[in-house]
Length: 593
Image (spheres, rainbow, N blue to C red):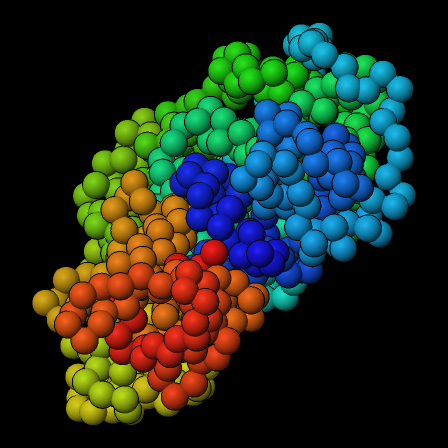
């Protein structure tokens, strides 16, 4: 069989867990319709090349041996098992191991300069690093600020439409906005976006990034739970063999800093991967796995699969949670320390964050309070919470703002229109406000039309109009046909209609592949049949065909197809050594291989 068939058959026999692991470690596979689509995507250079350059030393040397003709390797070998998981090699029925032809071709240039294993590598045993209180303290602060930054990214994504842009997938304007907000460099912010994507907190649907249900869970988790997610993802990104080898390199060569150790573990790193290794080293610094480039005991515990021990150690050094705010007359709110998750999540609904750190600063505004009311809070609830956190009466300007927000809320509404020329309708009992919007030059692009004294219409969608008006300082709310307020966060979480337990985009892909495979095996449609037959023709592969005869009885044929035209399949019946012509309308099922 060809590479395509070998890989497709191998993918079909994998368990769901193995497929999920494959999707975590491979890139560039898109949204395949079936296992043959997936195999074709995985064999494409844009997926193969980065996968090969990310192989660890023992994986690369094992692949070199297999490409060189050594086929009697054991599938229990960790490197062989990893290569099988990555879809770079396959196992024949007799148990022998072979590299796919496309993989062997792609690996030639990368493996050509592969250096021998470093002296003393790999080492066995657990990596042991000293527990230094001051170092762990610095690591804990970095870990806290990183999980906080990822939370800010998700909150920013819930308030702004993130579109697929450029090679990295995230636009410069989005990166700069968040960088200014977090007071971090653009490169660091791109690393946060990468973390969010790897953790499947952001999911690309079409040309837009959406928050996933996992993002909601992340925002609702404790600081330590978020850190465990980030740390686990970092270790997973090394691959199982890469993690073991990093443990060995650091144990054997304690003089190496983390970035040098990573370069030793991944010897095929090209210029592109070199940049990724730099990002990986920066992420390690942010997670607390290194301080000033030197590995910490937190990394040692996690590499040795003692995540809970690392979490317990980190817990003792994280900044202590607070339950207090300083509410000031200039409408700013100062948190002297990190707030507990429940308080923070409610506070963020009706405030704007000005400075994020261990001690953060928030600000109240008419827009932020309107947002909180749209999210289901009441002014009474907001006032009660501020009083509790402040511990004394609120400054008079804050009380004035709360009363004004309550009076103005719902004065301007947006609802869906009735046709293509009227996709949104603005309504208000305040005719002067509608006139102001109609004459506002900043809103000219919306081309508002006065339909009557109490409403305006436009051809733009309600969500676009909503954010456009808010950007210019207006306080609209969106309502549905029943008059209920639509939360501004409602349209930023994507679950694909799945139950929460299945709302993992990779799990959704696995489910779709299984469903497509089952459909082809049971009752495929014409498109499925044609696709399978065309693949068999292209790869000169045998096809098991189940068709019905004139009496309606199902008959099975083993056919080597030679042509598909005019709604008929022609091919050699290998069992009876005769040529057969079968109408597609009589074919019930087909199976390749």
